[in-house]
Length: 233
Image 1 (tube, rainbow, N blue to C red):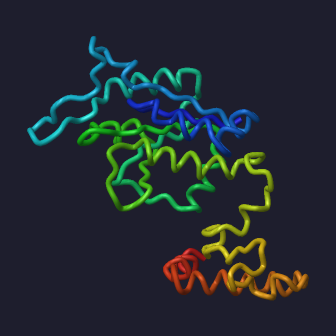
Image 2: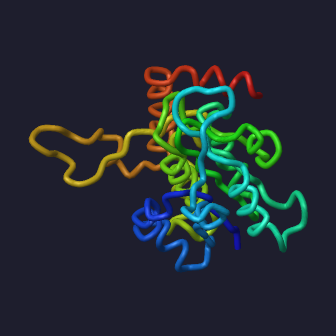
Image 3: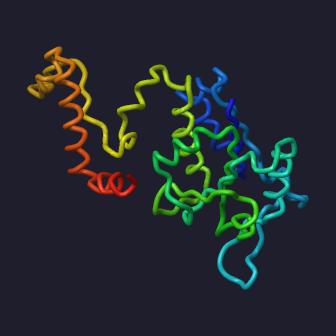
């Protein structure tokens, strides 16, 4: 069973996402194990302080390396060296893509480090993390929301997480294209009609239409995905 450990100073932020929908079912079914670790529990300070002023001056506070190091030591104490993927959530990291998510979904053990405050001691990045990943070119208050996005995107690819294992095959970004348009009943709602091809029962023609629509959607909305797919061939 894959294991995801989360290092955070706000573990209660995860109570909602881990107790609802697909993640809740995946955890209950034993598809994945997710553990929360409060970095403050590893602080040697009597007030459980995990930050300090930056060397050289500057605004804000910086997260200290010691409690993060001690937390990792505790988590990895029974693991062989190099067996865990330790990911620092950071706006400086490489951007999360579906291709990277697929890669991560094959890992047996992932550790997510959620930064906060003005930043995190650079030595965490240099010596403790194996990866540095961002969910986009914008700034969040901390790494918790980014960790939630990553967890959701990874777990849904694990065998047994989704009711229909084939449902992920046609999703956006699964083949460097966006998903084709989806419709359901009623076929006519206030004059807004479903394309007739989908009502024809001709599955070969429907598959062809869906492929054409997926490519059309991508060319109009995200042509960069087409270029990217070609460059990675």
